[in-house]
Image (cartoon, rainbow, N blue to C red; front, top):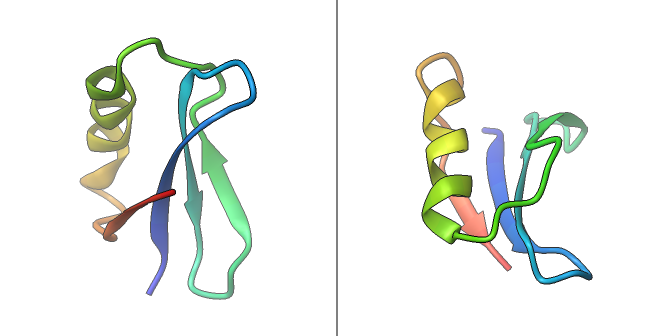
Length: 57
């Protein structure tokens, strides 16, 4: 099963990346978010078609 990775980048912005079952990156936030909830909302936008668990690092 694929998953979403929620993390902070080097500039301390929240970002997310979606990984397929084979471990390959298939989508990302494309921008950093100041608020974690905004990054989580970005995940929710695509979760309808890719209902994978979210991991945080």
